[in-house]
Length: 402
Image (cartoon, rainbow, N blue to C red; front, side, top):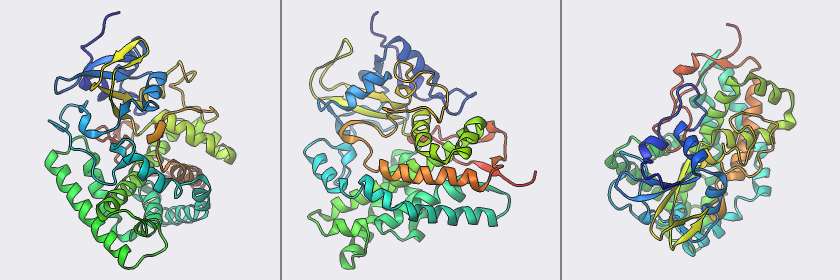
């Protein structure tokens, strides 16, 4: 079968099926079924690749011959950054390769261990209960995003890093702009500058008067000021947006799959499996990129040095070659090997923290409000199709009497 160079980013990555807010764009499934690793034309004319099959995506993510450096990449979506992308700023290890990436990751790995994150469980339970209490006091309706999904992980990451919780709206506003696919380059630049300056002030405060938190711990090492600012900003953004959208979008999915909601409510021991299945099924961090540093043979194709590969994590997590009946949400599925947290050396550093937050927040919500329901027609829920992290902008819910 000849290469299909007609596959374009705009056709493949953007348009989700209107009938199902939890499914990847339909074009991705068609591409995966025909050719799990296919040629793709990028908006700037670059002829690169798109990987949609689980095996292909996992292989690229685990291969050091593929780079995560921003400045080597071609952006796959229309209306995105034009021209050469800037390199990662100090501390932004998501856009770096070894040895720079290795240095940062080693510094942080010990602070995000399974054991250390498990010790946070009691505090996460307390924060969760506080916000559920506030929802209950507020009446019988709420926007779950504003009332619960955002403030719970925001409160947790603020405490972990030592950020004043009162400042959460500042960095959240800037994070939303930076992750918006509709934001102009000028808007992104302004948000990045403002977030950078906020973190500079915070780092200076931690150096002058360290407290018992992760950012203060980092100031005691050999990291420079710009590196500390970059790491702090990265952890704040990653610790809030992805988990918040998993809680909100996960709740939306459960409300639209009442049999799965009932199973979670009936079996508290199902929480761990539920989190993994929701990560697979929803894959809110849906797309990432890599660039070949040398010619690489993969799946019978040769990816040439310098070619960008768009990795559709959401399509890979719905690959029937890896997960039977992949379009079904089944909380009893053992979704081992899903790519919701990525794979390889860049696999999500905070995945254990995210797991703790989700396996506390989701069961607590459905137990506190056993008759939780959508307060609007499902079609009226505004989806984050304009964001790098998928989910919902708002989720109006109700409980109690009709």
